[in-house]
Image (tube, rainbow, N blue to C red; front, side, top):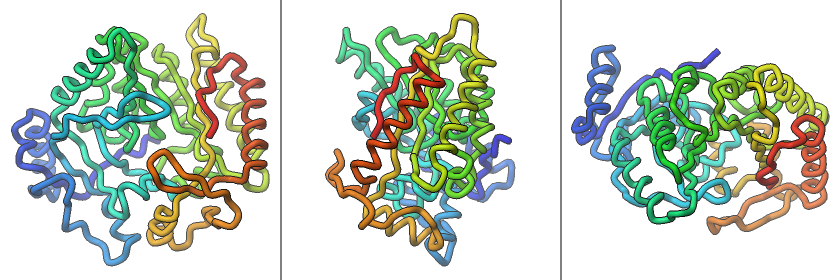
Length: 347
């Protein structure tokens, strides 16, 4: 099950027609009879239907915007990379907890950028500025780039660009499994292909419109077989009755699949792991409850600790003793199932 993304409507910036990809996409969607219309800016889209925030959100997730990325500045991307690589914004998944509810608001339509060569030229200059250091780029800071890859080919283009860059490295994360076109990319080991994983209980309850954990684990095995550096992000981690058993099962199944698929000579030393506990902001909570009024997400401020984040706004995280218990539990799971893996952080 790949859950192919097929938009219900398309907008495009007229300047996108100056690029071969933009022109071909507009022609392709028109030939399919897709509702398509020009827009003055990919940042200001009007005309997405829906009488309620929930309906507008659902329709935004079915809206594709074809644009040109004009800014020559890349955002920083701590702690995982030096810079974001802006290929796509948003994704078709409807995860109730998504942190983009804070930044993208209630209409998170999907934007793709057709000027890939210009974006990669900026990346090349940033790599050169930091020589002889290695420069890391994150391709999924505000998106999941895999669902739209069938239309853009940008992810493969970026992977092969970094394959040619001695001092450039690329990483991205996905929940999606439509990855066949990426398996033969000339990555030269310079791209870390990561999967966002969670236990069945969380995915079924909160990660609407995304592949099941088992499908993601199988896809991760294929990526490993294609000799990519591989990573897992276990996020967001929730505490609920039976959470330890659920997450242990996830780690065990992941290890089983990787052992089965691993090329000869592979060890878990080449695997990266990132762990992120559930957190929320006041603004995100308001948006989430507008979009998902019946959400059962654990968002009671009085049960959490308030902490200021790196971007200046506060977030509600689990209590210190709960965080310690979770960290110890997951580090024990790593020791049992991926003893040599690199744990990048637990937050």
